[in-house]
Each structure stands twice: as C-alpha cells, then as structure tokens.
Length: 190
Image 1 (spheres, rainbow, N blue to C red):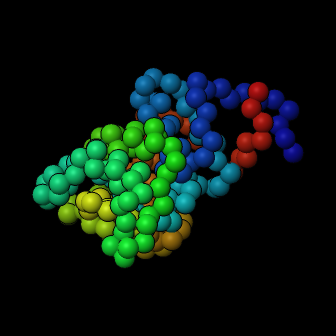
Image 2: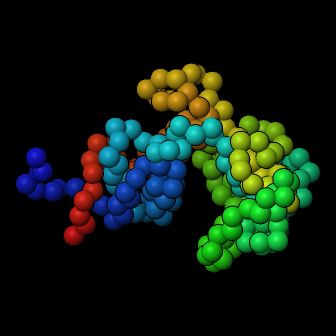
C-alpha cells in the first residue's frame, strides 16, 4: 500500500541509482544540495554494476597523456559526429544526432575521468585501449577499465568490473551526504 503521508524532503531528487544518477547525486551534494536518490532496485548500480567496467573517456585524459596517446576534444567530437569516419572493419559507426550533447561530452570527458579518479574509481593504471567497447576509439584509444576481483556476490551481482566503478561512486555519494530510498518506484512528482 502507498504511504498516507510523505515526510522526506530534499533539494534534489534523483530517479535511478545507476552511473548517471549516482554521479549527478554526488555533484549536487558537493554543490551544497540535500539529495535523495530513489531506485526500484534493492541496491544501487543499475546496468553499470553488471557491466565490464569499461569506461570510454577521451579528449586527453590523464592516462591517455601518461601513455602517449594523442587525443583532444576536437578529435573526440569528430569521432562522435562525422559520418565519414568509419570503424576498422569499414562499417560506418552510428552517429549521435544531438551535436550539442556530443560537443559537451568531448569537451568534458577528460575532466570527467579526473573527477571519477579523484572520487575513488580504481581505474587500472595502463594505457587506454579499445577492448570491451564498440567504436569508442576511432582516432584514439579511449577505453579505461575497472576490475573486480572478489567474485560474484550480493555486493557484485555479476562479479564484473562495473562493481568497482559503481561501489566507488556510491561510497563517495554516501560520504557527501546523499540519502537513498531503494525498493521504491517513483510514479508521480508533485
């Protein structure tokens, strides 16, 4: 049954405790907002927690620079939007239709990597590659990896690298004061 009264309040309510939701919650809390994350699942993570933990970030990330991989926001943007750029197999890669969103992705990708690293995401310290992703590095290698070594469990439903990514972001969000309401489905916002 539905509760008769609702006594939870927050400056920001995030629907979904996946990679985007948790990161948005963390950023909002760091900006001084009270944050509540609502998710229908019993735990955080969404699809990301069962993923391989491969994170395509480019435009000149710290690891790209460290390992001598040339990349910049303009090259990344071209890879995201130019229909003449094709994959190694010659197959034309899908292109996103919102150029503004893709420009923002290209311009902020390296800073996103730094942000995640600073918040405890244990990226493997090795040269980015194109392993585990589909067309993430047309002109430059952009796939960064997290690894989970503790096996499958309640903490890691798939025993996959995505657990390392998501548990680190969850930990940072909880430390920043983000509150969670799990096993709840949001139907209506008033």
